[in-house]
Length: 95
Image (tube, rainbow, N blue to C red; front, top):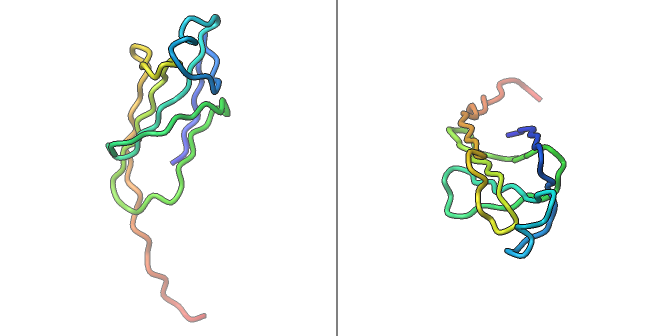
């Protein structure tokens, strides 16, 4: 899975905690959840790309949330992408 993103009026930086909520200009990071798992990871790299490798064949869902330094989602700043990774075809042929 590979998704590019762009944010406006906010800087993606690795700063966390309630004290940074009032920093101007606003700062934040991404929360990324895969397949409704009970955990997520924070991405504060500001490289404008989410890259997830080695997902098994089948249906998948990736949720990306833009959050403030206290991990609260900015209203309306969440996207969910669903997709299917096809099963690999067995190779037939001689080596």
